[in-house]
Length: 89
Image (spheres, rainbow, N blue to C red):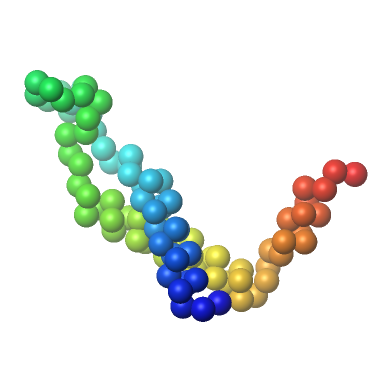
């Protein structure tokens, strides 16, 4: 696997991880008892911290990419194994 493929696959894992961890830890005004400002949605978070999302996404994507790359190197799960698992007899 060349370096461009590694970077591209890692970026894909990072984006997916960012969407996975995005809702964790967010609180709405209903949950915190705060007042909703005029023009804001009732469901808008009051404590959004983007750097925490970036950190969590980086950690999760590093773990997922590590598992993906280890599978690529050692061949634990192959395309034939997946096809055989889903094959209908």
